[in-house]
Image 1: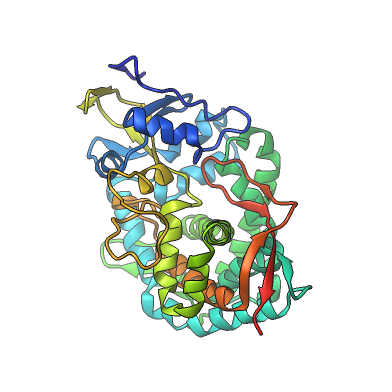
Image 2: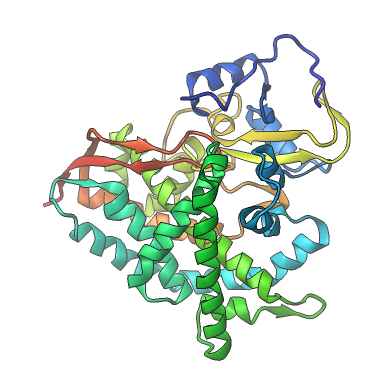
Length: 401
């Protein structure tokens, strides 16, 4: 339990129907106080406090408690979630990270950039209509899944498997986890079978690709990844690499449609692709909060944190905090503080370079080909909590000549 020291501390009911973590309600709470209470624990709302607490030595990675918060205390999803490198601490976390890091080398991913560019062009050329598209199903979904297929060295035509199963597992990151649990666990079981087959194939037939690097990972003093660690890690990669990229591309399109001058600028200056990714993730990240858990009691800025308390660090609220970052959405800004879309500290996202690479290639190509995009009726969205993004995003545009 957490002891509060001020009656002015706002409360956010993140479980309420229609709650939005990027709402005026949350921004007003940020102006009232640096934190708020929620049914899940403490929500930290301001940039400086998020930055400091993200690395606080008395906080551990907190998402490990997410299943228990939703009454899930056993079963396939519970056990897989507990296996995540994200949810490991200390030497166990460092060992897994040392073993997995080489597979995510910039050299390996950088060599795939021309294929990412060709894929984006192919998908845009294949839109069913010349002046409109359903952005998720016609671009973000196949792009994210086929990028993973390219990276993993599997046939690109198998991308619907990645899309279907990873989408179902992604439901676990929102407040509807409990009601979606049977669907989530069914998808997870099928991804386990898929990962087992990949591991068996690359063990018998090694290639120059990511999976082979993953399967053969070893270091003096660290040993090798066990089969269970390989399988759990691959399923996490398939889920995380697909789900976050698809969602973030949809959120990027939403953001740019609200800032048409920035979209036109990106079309004129494709070298701003990397900056565009960072700026979108600052103001509209798919990972809406980063979770920590209090390891032992401590005082911070007038608040007594007690062991076991869950702390959610709100990435969008921090990234748009006017105390720390001046100005609105601007892909030419050069003085931005780091955003929290990939987490931070020891648990900074292992696959961040992959996500940055594939999105920074896709967005300038989209900007050059889809002029003056605007939203059409029919958009649907995941709940605006945890990980979010559009399920459907119909858009209209003027095709480039």
